[in-house]
Length: 185
Image (tube, rainbow, N blue to C red; front, side):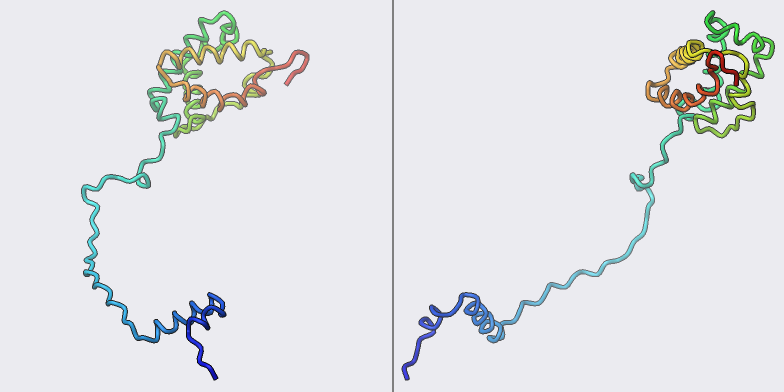
């Protein structure tokens, strides 16, 4: 019988089988892996003194109420808004009774805006439907009142984003305030 060389055998064997055989020979040679370097011991130290707050530690975003200036800011807006309403010929007739009890109106309105804006106040007055029942308020009058509020917010330097947020919170009340002609609430 003729002996065959490893190379002759290798040329007739699949490459995968050949690689497996070489790997087995290499492992069988007893080559040792170098030892892993020792890691230095870790001392656990917990300290947050003087550490900068991370994004996770950041305070929650300010509420609209806070961005309006809190109680004093809302009261200031309500004062200007009330003056605008009483001076506006498009709607001042609707506020005749308000002139007699302006302090009560401003207090209730302040509580309502405070609550809508996420403040600590609780509006305890009538719901908007009952408060405006029979007044015959039109879409145009409602829009005029919104314009008067916008003027007050502009004068106080309230941002466009904050005005938009407040108007979005007030918008649902329109359905309860505006009376369609021929339809009594």
